[in-house]
Image (cartoon, rainbow, N blue to C red; front, top):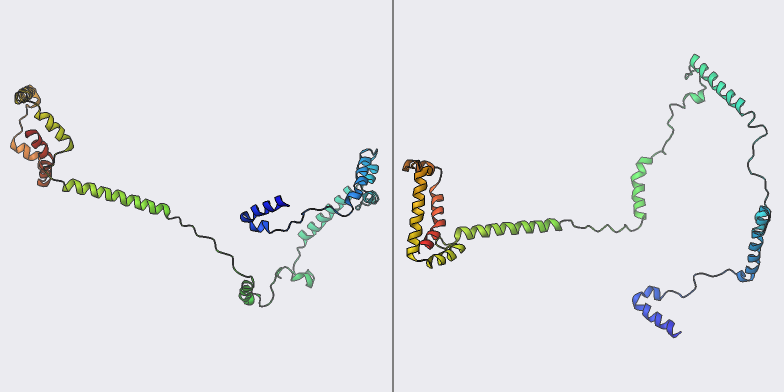
Length: 266
């Protein structure tokens, strides 16, 4: 009893409904079951040892063994022996009727008055005033049907679209921020890579720079004389080349590359 109370106390917080259920056994044996059990077992054993099906059925169920063995359905005598002649006679009768109808078609005048109007009469009818009273009957059934079922919960599918909108807005804000920083940055601010280049140039002596520039000038002069710069570019040609370039684009180009020139000259 003590262990049973412990189980009940443990079950109470888990499932109060199950804990409050009655403790009656769900299954029970019929009255006198165990008193008749030995006899039932002996009948099964005798059925296994029976020599014929009748003896086995008698041992298992005397009620079924006592039923009549007569079949509930039967055929008349010589049914199958005369079946062929009866089928042929039926076919010949159908041929006679068909030929008679072809020679003299059946009309409404030749039919009896009872059968003459059957082909024009509708097969199905509705009571008088059925459709007039139909809406009222439907409303009455709806009123007596009881409370309506709870409508299904609507699940919103706009969560993915909302996040896509947020992502697109973040991309647009990032592009606008980069564009604003690019156009609003100081014109004389050196590029990140130019600072290291300027520091490296400061460590080079003036003699080495002059020697390097003289070598580059000689190389450019030799390449120009060898045919790379055989065609001279006049001021007119320069104007033609820059005809499609606006003054604003030229100013942006100078503002963009002016810090690099200052870094090298400083």
